[in-house]
Length: 313
Image 1: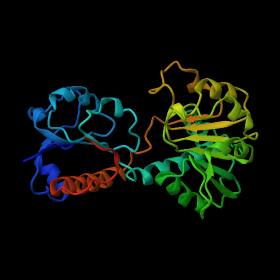
Image 2 (image 1 turned 90 degrees about the vertical axis):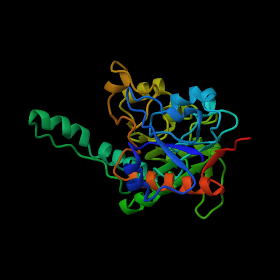
Image 3 (image 1 turned 120 degrees about the horizontal axis):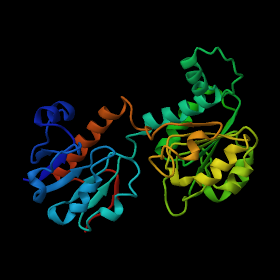
Image 4 (image 1 turned 60 degrees about the vertical axis):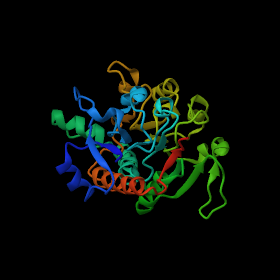
């Protein structure tokens, strides 16, 4: 009977979280906590659910996992796992899992930056009553770069804030509806964007997609929100642009990451930084559990898996 590693403490937690363990599969448990030993079933595991934001290093032991058939991430991004994936294994990502949390954070960062909530939080520590005129999302022109599951979820949430317009960008143009522009058109679109939200995957084509030239095209007072990957933005160029006071940024991801304590981005003006917590909310666990349960059921039944990124041999 095939063995699946799942990120739970024991059978009792797995049964509560999954609803029931699918028949025809044995579970073992690995949460990749500090100091946690690898399960003794390393030479038997066939299906490995990577614990959220950890556990990838286990794939460096792929030679000790001769029966590994499927690696299931709990993140939408998967590029860092590809070099570690053994050739016979199939990689599945968690597309759709983080739509709710990440879309919510993207809008929260835009609101917090525009309404100076970070400044007010610091002023609270000193008891300073400091009124600052804010910038609403209402009437702003929003450019969403990356129109996949999360980009669409961001758009749905923005519609309640009376934005002036939403322009969508993806790798390739689509006539719609809704109309989606190609990333090749980005230079034409940036001058007309008051808020730019990055949620595109990191690929060789999107590496440092936003650099000095792109930042210079933004209108005065524009806000750059990055909830995708830090490498989509040239950090040095962003620090320089922020230093002018001309634009703002709200970032859940950075390059490098984690951001070193002495990095100049921490102290740049008009920047709000959260530590890559787009998926880290109460919405995560129930959706992750449903994904794991459904994928294990498909695997045990020999059915096609969802969210396949690369097929094993």
